[in-house]
Amino acid sequence: MTAVPESELLDRIAVAIRARVPAYAERDEPFWEAAVALVLRERAGHGAEMLFIQRAIREGDPWSGQVALPGGRRDEDENDLAVTVVRETREETGIDIRAQGELIGPLDELRPRTPVLPPVIVRPYVALLPATVEPATSDEVAGFFWAPLTVLFDPANTRKTRVRTRGAFWIWHDAIHYQGQVIWGMTQRIVKTLQEVAH
Image (cartoon, rainbow, N blue to C red):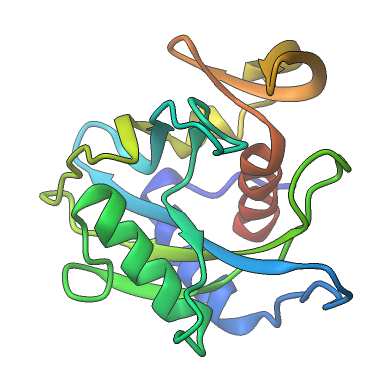
């Protein structure tokens, strides 16, 4: 595949997201729904970047302490997962992706591959922000970082990695490494989908 010039990358992604029909997961019981945000921006000297959060250590959270995307579980009164992703991103990072940026659209839904994880259906949404908007930490978020898309999409930064979660060790074959952070699991799978859309 031909690489997209970085200056055109976010425009290319936005056009592709608007034009495609995402794949939706089967709603076979049991399941619950959640939405996460791929928050993208372009900064002079930094290029196109994506926001990641470090989840706070919380009892009962199966993704406690992990690198993740902003987002969370759909409330019962929310009839649209787009509403969920806007609310959850605002609660976790202080960013209102509709008021401060643009909600572009969804990617393919995912379900965990590991039976020990909850039966969640996750719908990722792509959002664009101006370069001046910055997140803040919250009770649910211990920290955050921005990672360049060129780094995330570069196979040289992907490798087999031993990770620890839920009191056990797992081998993830294509974890992404960036400045000491490890992006793996469903988050890595979502990044991979975005890469396919971008190219």
